[in-house]
Length: 407
Image: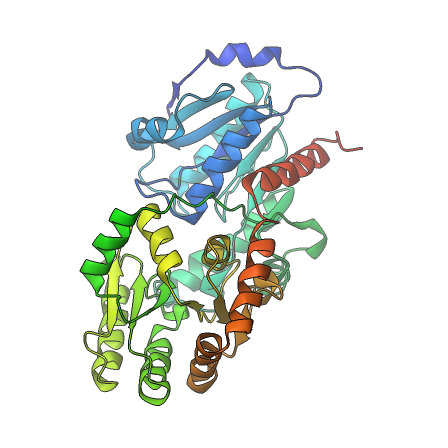
């Protein structure tokens, strides 16, 4: 397996690190041209760690090195290392990287630890400690995208093995910590919570507002949802709740759902289910699937929304909840899994299995000005607790713990 350094400084220079500095390998083989939540987390952690004076070797696919270099920009203390592999999935090629190439790299470059940032890794020949970030174990509950044989023969035993092999497991919420221990069988004492950070919102822009209003027709009001149409996102029930809101409470606006459908068979199936729910509820033209929107467009939509609704059946965290709070939009979200933990008392919690409860929650926020003001104020306070600097600081504590440098 070939490793190709996309260096910003020669690798050998890293050998001169100070006694108090930490040098890590951070694995981002998952990056495949799209910056989703996992990729954003890895990128932000790498930037923050390097900015703090420590050193990062970031591992990526050779085919994506140039793209990732452009995203990362010129960051002192950060070096890209490319490996020849086509996928980040559980496979022999990736296990060889975990157990061979990365271990040799860690040894030759005097690395303190390896941080595997995406759910699984198999370092069977460890030369330095390793941390595995498991963001959630959604496929243990929702397997829409996974063949049952693949789940039983590969994913489930693979997750169990990955959690056994790594020294420490990090995850994003206490809910996920408990869920990983319960469903994977990992030792609860080796699982540590490091919450996600939160980006700063893009500036408001009247021209973008005008364009979005023209595109979607939002003059009569907007209920906004973000995150796509996966089964766990509970979109058919949201459509039914929105229809009831229009019919029973006289809401005249639109429901806009952002998020790009992948085109995979299970996504096509969910889109047909969602379209059927729209037709059955006579909401054609009132429910809009916006597809992919940029961060700026999302932030403008969040500001324009009367209510942000996030009625998922399962989340390991739920960053969109905090993104809405950050720009001063009242939030209604589910009372299950990690969402109450993330939202605290700054959102109205509803039962996502109940169409009536969802509808009533949205209607209550729309009708009660004092409740809206309270949710906005608490949301601003709650979202201020989350930052990538905080995430970096908590990971640094974990790095020092794993390497025996903690106080």
